[in-house]
Image 1 (cartoon, helix red, strand yellow):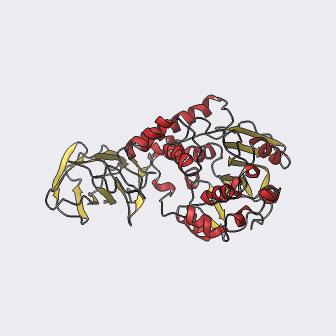
Image 2: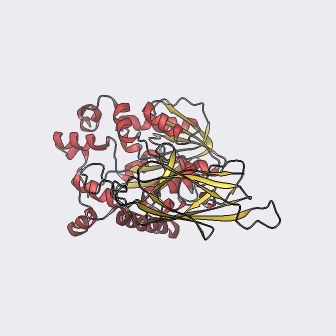
Image 3: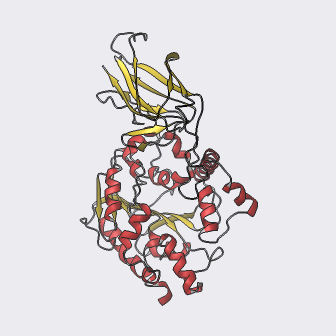
Length: 443
């Protein structure tokens, strides 16, 4: 119907590339070298982990509508990862976050040869493609996919039991709906499956996120879309949660989400679909190539001296996500630590910085423990980076000499601080003490 066509134009979105670049091309660090293994349980990463568990190592993957690069984690499986997006800013962002190639193109005319990819995947993209263009995009997916290849998609769908369909909205409602995130092509789960079935002989699909949603998503649906997915008192409770409490809620939701997948529990209809399709037989929607060992920091420190990478270092749960300050570093709570394995070295060095505003009057006390022994005790009296060097001369030597040893470092602060706990926009109520960056070994 006319109501379902030209929705970008109706919403006043004249430049789709700019619109999506503004939404998704963030400065967030998503590079796989800095992914914290605990994040695999967070509900935010549930869609990424579904793809991760279903692609074979060493394969060639195309990410349609790659955005900021949420699938960069696939690189941990030694995959060649190509991202394509309408936005040049998004293409640059994905490449910065570790994709082998990030390019700009219209999804209706992909710049790749026939039968190029083992997998063509997308997350939250099909609902942004207008109805009259969907079949063109699916035809392009078929063209660039190898004959036995698989396509997988996390798809936002229209559930008219929860909200009005496009044809039922007033002109103002329709304009507002599209302006929020650009949803111009949400169709029902059944229509979505039927559409893919016209292009692929084998299609598996299940509704997801029926039960498990992040605290932020529940609030966003209520505030921006005016759709209430939970009771008033729970919504009020979620609004009052601190950063760490929201994180705990979201980790619990993500853990339950994974258990639902692993146990094969069918969920009631929702507004999201996991879909897997191929012109070869598709045996399972979940865990076809599940192996999460590469997410753990179990490698021995070798030629590289950079200990910021989670491929070689295990950071405990008291660190916040890595950020590119620059350089790349991490904020910590009051106490935090990390472990690594290396051959004997001369010294370990890093920098500490705090943004606590009153340290000149009330110095921040820091204690540094290396392999169970207190190595440094210091007072931080300003907000300038402070270099720390720890000698390994006094540490026991491995037997035989030249083999590797396990090391651990703990940092303890006497208090934390919240940067912007009450800010209406860009709220930051994390409990942080110091940031650590530039962690290096010297032989």
